[in-house]
Image (cartoon, rainbow, N blue to C red; front, side, top):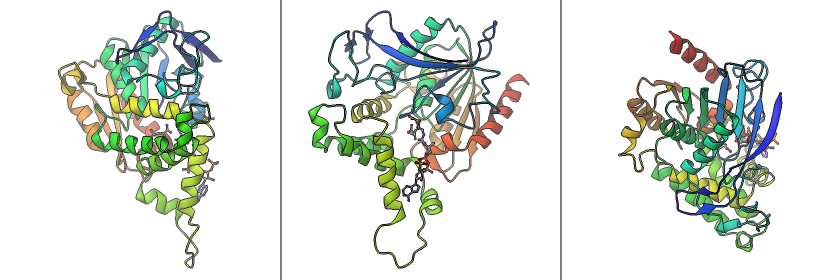
Length: 342
Ligand SMILES: CC(=O)SCCNC(=O)CCNC(=O)[C@H](O)C(C)(C)COP(=O)(O)OP(=O)(O)OC[C@H]1O[C@@H](n2cnc3c(N)ncnc32)[C@H](O)[C@@H]1OP(=O)(O)O
Ligand SMILES: N[C@@H](CCO)C(=O)O
């Protein structure tokens, strides 16, 4: 029922930047069984540091007994180009026998990621996708894909995402990249290069993923006499180390730049014109406390996507609420599918 595979694109991939990747591999996982009529496909686009194993990083939404239960759905998730979970990225060769490119890996855009996954969709023979879903960078890909191929997707569910990455979002990403570039080991181009910088970058990023309230709830001090060694400090260090143990600095730079590049309106006459091309039935979910992708960005999507539904979740978790608040998301999905068939 679970199938892991690597698909090699049949031809070199020309990137939006003009660079060419001679050989691109896309690691993907499918879970569940495809119905003979092909009507039960849910394709998941993952966010910044996740991977093709959606049941591990989106528990509560994907898995036995969840809304997207593999007993009912054929679940597809592919690791994005530039990442470090099996698809071609800075630490893997881009041609047979070639050395990894590390910090010389070319600029990848969200459009490039989608072009690679569109080729995978063809390879898998999936002519209709019942639901395309993603949050954050995953939502950016899902929107881009729905604009590129409006006829393929019946339903589109995007969470905590936007039509164009904001100056605020770019600035957060640049602050994180500065932490990585300040680490001299990054420039040495080894698999472990930039680890200290990556850990600092994750600690910076967390401030944009959570909220004042979330830190207050989980990291409040009980010892009034304390002058140092605060819980919030050790939490930041722990989270940095946790990402460092499973990710690399070079992929992090590539993926954060891809996020910066996201602009549905580029070359398409602007964002409203691009969004108006979407034909899927759309649910847009915002999170009240999301400071990185604030609800006004999702409201802009809803204004320009024909017939789109909007729901806002109240949450203390900020942007990461899209990964954590799976009970209210399940409720919103159930309501959306009922509305879709009404
Ligand atoms: C193997 C893989 O690649 S799996 C990929 C996993 N991640 C992804 O795919 C990306 C998406 N997921 C995420 O971004 C996150 O996992 C989230 C948002 C879903 C949840 O974040 P988490 O870090 O798990 O939760 P939270 O912020 O509550 O932190 C809990 C962790 O911090 C630790 N912690 C909490 N307070 C402190 C503190 N004061 N000091 C030190 N550690 C602390 C907890 O012990 C816990 O540790 P654990 O993760 O080892 O169990
Ligand atoms: N916490 C998410 C990033 C925010 O979208 C991740 O690590 O992928």
